[in-house]
Image (cartoon, rainbow over all chains, first blue to last red; front, side, top):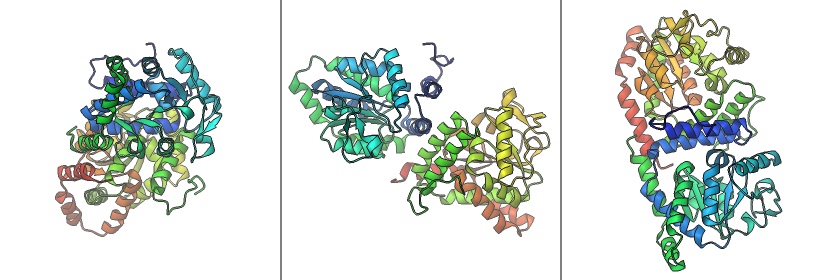
Length: 249
Length: 249
């Protein structure tokens, strides 16, 4: 890719530098907001404490997420500025693997940013990107932040919300959806209200869900169901917290 | 202040929101860089784990820093974009309390940003701001990043470097200066190479050093010396790390 950093892949901090570079490129193109840059920094700190790797409980969560997405009637991947900047191709690959819709959904919503993000995803292979119609509302939150598409997130049964704000994560959870949250801070509200919290960097988590989806594609409905039943969100959150507290990075 | 957030001081996250607002205002005025926003996010994450308060070991470090600054022949406060955006008045107050020079020193150095930061500090009461002459070099680091004033940081015996990059903190330490680093991550290199690491938010640490300086102003030279002798940097770093690991925030 032409927009990558000039750092060899063997460099110990290659992925961390690549991630930061993509976020900064996202600012240049108007995809990433200032809040997005600050959020990136918070994520870097927690990822550092996690050891910058996918811990076993996060891998189990990603596998459970893949099972839930494969079993869904109407799965939707919610994309914000940081997700679009960091993992555009990877998001499209996941959508294809589990036959999900992609919907742009921003905390600081402007039509211009939604269009830019939709164009960016299109340039990375997305055929259709929802989020511009915005003809439905998530109940219980601010008007602007509640806007979703009626045939997208609003009517989804399983929704992936990476890097979601706590209020909206909670409101989506109350709509009886299976909510998959990707977040690096196990103590923040979004993963705590999620059905399936994945405490991992989106850069690792999204491709990992896709890989699990390919593995699980031929599983029967009861097979997928039992994977989902075996997963315990509280245990996963506790394991992530323990790793952060006890790591010697 | 006219540039503050519209949040009541009683709000539990008042200081955190105020800090973020000041950083964002710093971007508007060209003082804070994109890297500065990401660094702010990293700081927020570690401050969250610290409990967003000055822990006892950080208070001892701040007192030791005050003693070292009062005892110095030529103390200098190094100021970067985030420090200027977050604590302009507080930096000027500290400089006055310990009779220190202020020098702007940027990781991503441009003349324009240095001038803007110097102007910003001037608007907050600084009489003289060094950093524009840049007629000396810190040995052992990149040309651009090594630039300092010969009658400022270069010849200082005690230097306060809040939010400093690891390479430069190390190079400054090797110049046999007493280096006071303020950083929220006890595991990062800058506080680890510092003579006096203060693991605290600059928003709390700078005014705290000033307060200690007022308390210690009438102490004798041997009295200040014994405060400095009693301080152990490794113990302070370990205590901060323990707080981060064991907090239940």
